Image (cartoon, rainbow, N blue to C red; front, side, top):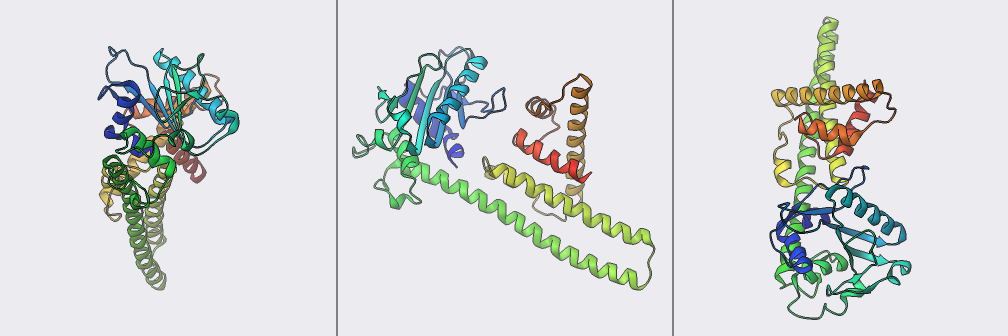
Length: 332
C-alpha cells in the first residue's frame, strides 16, 4: 500500500516540495538495482539538465543497524547508476532502534532528524514518531507532516485520527481505499473464475461418465481431459501471478481491468497460453546461452529487462517471472 500511495505524483510532489523546494520536476524511476535488490520508491529528475539528486524513499517498520546497512547499499547503487549521491528519506512506521537514534542529529527538515551519511549520500533524513512530536499539534498541518503521520500513526480510518478535515490526510486515505478496492476486485475476479471452472468440471465429469457408459473411443476421452488440464493450468498461472504481484505491490485498477474477465473465452485463453509458452521459451533460450558461455548462475535481472523490452514479458517484475518459470519447469 505504501508504495502505491507514494508513487502517486500528488504525493511524491509533497515530498520534493518540502525537501528540495521543487515541484513537478521528479518522476518515479526504476526501483530495482543492479544487484537485484529493490528500494521502495526511487524518484529521479524528469530532465537530465536539472541539477537535482535522485531521491530514495523507504517506508520501514523497524529501523535498525541491519536496515541502515541496506540503505547504504541502495545509496551506493544509486551513485553507480546516476553518478550523483542520493537523498534518502526514511519514514519509520514503528520503532527506531537505539543504535540508530543515538547517531541522529537535528535536521533542517522540520519533523525529521538527520542520520550521518557524509561518505555515501547527499543527505539521509529520518521521520519517526519521536521526531514528529514537535509539529503534529500545529494546525493546519504541513502536507509533508500529514504524509509522515499517515504512516507513523497507521490509523485504519481517517475518523480514527485527529486530522479528519485535513486535505492531505483525505487524499492519502482516498488513495489507500482505492488500493484496497483494487485488491478486492482482483480477488473477486479470481473467485468468479474458480466458480465457473468448478461448474465446467462438473459438466465434464458427467460427459466422461456418459462416454464410458457408451464405450467411447479413447481419443475422445483424452481430448476432454486435456481441455480440462489446460484450463486449470491457465487459472493457476493467473492466481500465481496475482499472488506474486500482491506480495510486493498490488496491481492498479487499470491493470486488473485489462485482465480477461471471462475464463471461458477460448480465444483469450488460447492467446494467454501462446504468450506464456513464448515467455517460457525465451527464458529457456536465455538460460541456455548463459550456460554455453560458462555461466552457472541465472541472471534474472537482465533476462527480465531484455525480455520486457522485446515485448516478450508482461509481468510486474523479475520475481514474478522467476516464480512462474520455476513452476513451469516443475510441471514440464
